[in-house]
Amino acid sequence: MSRYAFLRHRTANARLLRAVTEGTLPAGCASAILLDRAAADTLPRIAPVVFTVTAR
Image 1: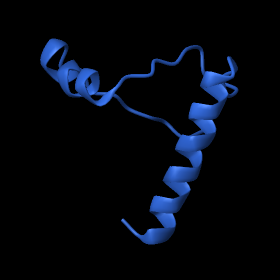
Image 2: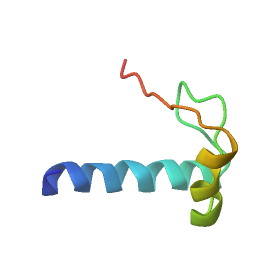
Image 3: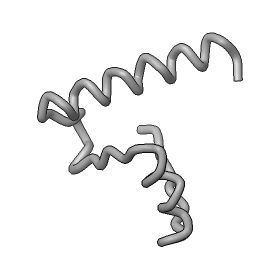
């Protein structure tokens, strides 16, 4: 991953986290779940689901 792509990811992630903690969601998002690292690491073992993101 390029430095530019990584910085874009970090910026988008920070924007989403800020919106969720303020109680708002970006257009097109119906819900959001924030997980700590331990919960995120456990999730694939509980329900092995493939998450996909479609750009529109």
